[in-house]
Amino acid sequence: MPSPKLRENCADCPIRYRAVCAYCEPDELEVLERIKSYSEIASGQPIFFAGEPMTHVASVVTGAAVLSRTLEDGRRQINGVMLPSDFIGRPWRETIPFDVTAAGPVTLCRFERKAFEAILKETPHVSERLLSMTLDDLDAARDWAVVLGRMAARERIAAFLLFLSRRLGKPTPGNAQRITFSMPLTREAIADALGLTLETASRQMSALRRDGLIETEGRSTVIVPDLTALQDEAQDDADGSDIL
Amino acid sequence: MPSPKLRENCADCPIRYRAVCAYCEPDELEVLERIKSYSEIASGQPIFFAGEPMTHVASVVTGAAVLSRTLEDGRRQINGVMLPSDFIGRPWRETIPFDVTAAGPVTLCRFERKAFEAILKETPHVSERLLSMTLDDLDAARDWAVVLGRMAARERIAAFLLFLSRRLGKPTPGNAQRITFSMPLTREAIADALGLTLETASRQMSALRRDGLIETEGRSTVIVPDLTALQDEAQDDADGSDIL
DNA sequence: GCAGTCATTTGATTCAGGTCAAGGCGCGTT
DNA sequence: AACGCGCCTTGACCTGAATCAAATGACTGC
Image (cartoon, rainbow over all chains, first blue to last red; front, side, top):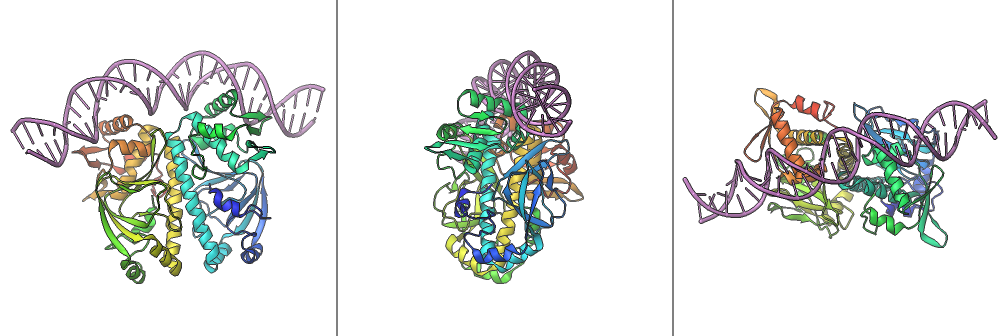
């Protein structure tokens, strides 16, 4: 899960894939335009299977995909929630070590992996950006370990809602602290991302709702009336660049 | 925590820092030799502080360093145990987002960061290797999330002992499955790495000892009489490349 | 508008691991 | 060899989250 830094660079991109950025680098975009293709994936469908040959790398355009690993006895851990502008895949490697699944309907922008690798080799700029992205992802993955290893259920949920608020949230006109977003994951997926059971995830969501930290509308709309209050729950240092 | 792949390349290196490898690339080594310096750090001493300017990057030569993040209320999560050949630091960034501390006496091979960055720019080979290492570290960090999010205390300890066996262990002559290594971390540090309390870490070590999965000699020597048995405890797929 | 299905909520109970509290023992020092 | 400091172990108890079990609610297709 990437840092907000790079995303800001690309905020106005017509095509929001981060590995290459139309807004920043029109020349390289042109090259990549020629090898890209879009694909739509239905909710719950696999995108990549762990260990299988990975013919493409991809960027999420709309929707959400989930990166997960499952133990033999069925326990699942979601390692990453990939949202619009996130990059999925691993150049220079034949296989991907995780399952990637559509959390809802997803649109991907795909690149044939070999062709993408060729571009990496030729264009230091793209290569450097990929390194930077990967380092960001590494920081984010390590930050997530703090959530999994040391936070209570309520804090985990708060941290996760905060992450989604920052990535997907739209502030209310006239009140920048009031954020609305559409929850892309089921309770089960939230639980799998946070190392909880779905019952605990649901209970903590209910508790946060009781305490006025969130509101919900229908199944998927979540409103955070006061982002600051949620940050306090999540033990998040206000700058927000570190935890996911 | 890196994959074993690259380490194997460097098994015979006189100097075992992975970002550059004397065995593989004598030319680049020569350049790096000129900007490197060794330093010894005493047990428990800080190496880098989170958020502070990072003037150097470094490789662990002997001993073990620990990468950690601490919440305001003192809860600590260890994000990585850096062992000989591991690379610490983050090119292109002024600060490091984690505390790095010597888990015992540590020898580092340090490079002035700016000089190292210049070499990265000039030498695609080193740059490519850094990307590859970072991608490995990312996979490892994500694998670790499975341990933190979904494994029971006993499994976590087993997974951790397995990691150390693979990185530090020496097989007994005539019995490749019997591994001995020196535990570089205190019970408290083990607990902080695994999201447990030190009491639970200690109890689970005792339980594994009772069950014959490990033996201990003195404070720090750990013997794994049968690596296979430990793998079963840790839910580890036998290839061993994925979990840490 | 209605039925059916699946996600979600909520309740009751259990249990793994956390917390609090003593000891014990390895190891460096004198 | 004895001392003392930390680290480690073990015990008793408690609590937060898991488990088991319904019931309710939201969106789907008819």
